[in-house]
Length: 465
Image (cartoon, rainbow, N blue to C red; front, side, top):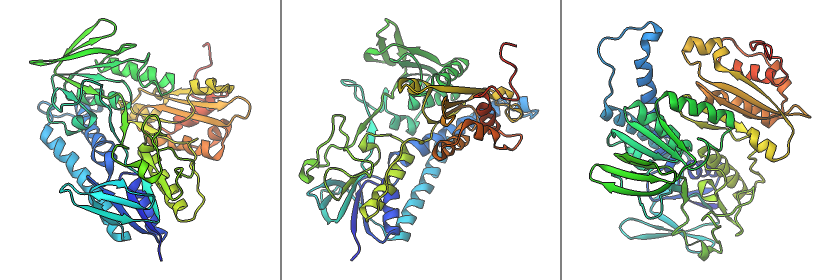
């Protein structure tokens, strides 16, 4: 008899786990209270990048004269058509996942899932009816949601979550974004392209504080170039709604008056209502479900994946965790390795990063060497009109092994995977620099940065000259 596996949640972790388990012969049921695809497909990765693609096209249209292209009339945008395109892209992806479920025989049960015991998942539908599903194995994949500021909940009108921002009901004349992390910076460029006056407030000393300092510095320059006001080292002391928007008082004494406020201070984990205790589980301090590197919880047969584990809140990490959990739930022995997880940030220009940042390496006491190479030294970047950017490689000073690759520039999220492969395979900076790269390409920047680790980059002037 096939193993009965029930998965609570169908985001990028849950649906991938479901398909892998079905491929391995399991009888799979997925419980989902909203729509397949989770936050990533419905509120995060896909709709935001679709909106950003529209603003990228808008920015390109505004600069076509630089490419020798002549357009008559004013360059403008149609917000409804931008929204329609977003919905079409999301809808196509939803249909794709549902088709995969049907193809692999995955049973999709609507409703909010919770644990009744170590072996039973209950689905509660919107009409109150319930369905109990007996299982041999269970995977928790309930994800996360936007975190709000205590005492100032989202209202969808003047104080927005990232979910509200994705809906893009209107383009406000001005917007205050609280938090200069990934979401905050992406929306800052997006709203600015559409004509909003944008102010970003960050309590830490720099934007994108989780990224390498050189990457943060470049993005801060681009924010300034785009006329986005960035205020760092300050927090929100109070906010009050007014007849025409919101007034925020900052800890540095500044007052910001704005039409809308977008709160992007992090994510809250979706463990409420799961009834973890009924299955012998307990949430951690942040509300996470603790797991080991096999994605196992402390209860045999129950696994957890994705944002709800609190490990790395990235869709592709959730997907890999889903595969690991599914394989292990069906008798395998697969483990997660987080050493070479690439990430993309879709600012303008975009960011691709993998491995250790320079400050992280130093905190670990690792002696390193670094090499950087500017986009403006690449022929392809000039041909594209995309010369803002840099490639940075961090290598172990003793072994020369690549420890981190960080890129800010056009198509950074695509070409950073060369760095992920280098770290995974234990390649050295010399090996990466010796690999022949096609010309003219942006990936040549990785080759040159690797050569720069040993001060051998061909297209950089001699130091001090």
